[in-house]
Amino acid sequence: MSATLYGLTTCDTCRKARNWLDRFEVAYTFVDYRAQPVPATTLKEWAQHLGGWEKLVNKSSTTWRNLLPQRKNPGSDPEWTLLLKEYPALVRRPVVVQGDGSVSVGFTDNGFKKLFGK
Image (cartoon, rainbow, N blue to C red; front, side, top):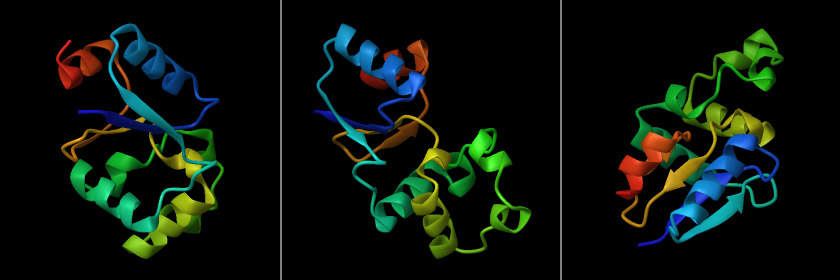
């Protein structure tokens, strides 16, 4: 089964994850979600798989800290998806979607070893 790695081409963490996958010869497809925006329904599915929007959004990012206070409290799924469409850098990186539909975020060497059985 192939995995899909969603992230930003310029993101150092995404580069590390891609290098890890290449080194361990794991088949994957990379999608830069600035160039190929993720549909709102997919963002909502990711949030559900991860346990909520809080798990999908990187609140320690500069982008989040620079948001106006009223933008930091979306009250509904459409408000969250609109925020992420407007600011794709808010999505934790990378997002990994396995062939079976499971979703995970972030990269660590040990985390990827568990995730990909290496």
